[in-house]
Length: 115
Length: 113
Image 1 (cartoon, each protein chain N blue to C red):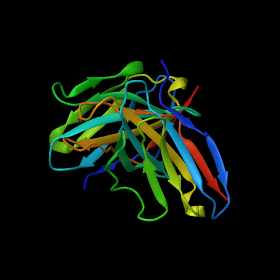
Image 2: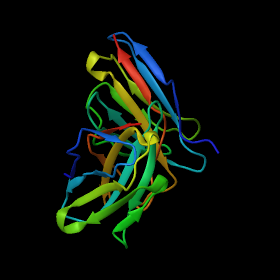
Image 3: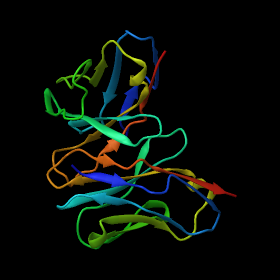
Image 4: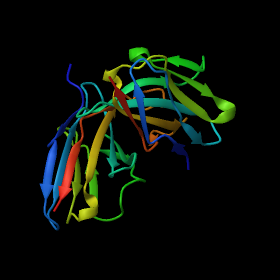
């Protein structure tokens, strides 16, 4: 029973390039959450998606960042024109349905390094 | 907005010592509470959670946590730690009706054999 999958595990980009991070939720889960962990900090919520819908993007930076969760395929977090400050670990979590009684299960994360 | 404080940034203990990691949150309403653990090189795993009922919650690997509403606290405990408990521990909350988790900054636990 596969857990939450994220790829790539490590991503190196130069300033100005684009970064695309992928997240495949656990089987049967239709809710995806993205969190960012900056060095020496806790995880910070970025965005919450259901299939084809963005439910809450209150934690997303206003520019350069976007997320999607299409009907088919993984959820994608896209960072355009990356800057050094984007270097962080990006974690995806999934849950089976809406409702705060559900637990979010986390993937292994993608560590983005911007040179 | 809610916030979570973990006052111990790095804790070093010897094997068999007792452990208590502090977690305090600020939010006036009803919350769900979680402790997650991240072992070296691995992803976040759920240790235990509190939604309602008995405020003393037992989790995996001998961990437990007590929700004290009057103190806005959810401290993690283990009576006798093992070397394999070396990891980073994160406390998290989400208010009832809100899907997003708010995390503390984490506590790095190092167990000396």
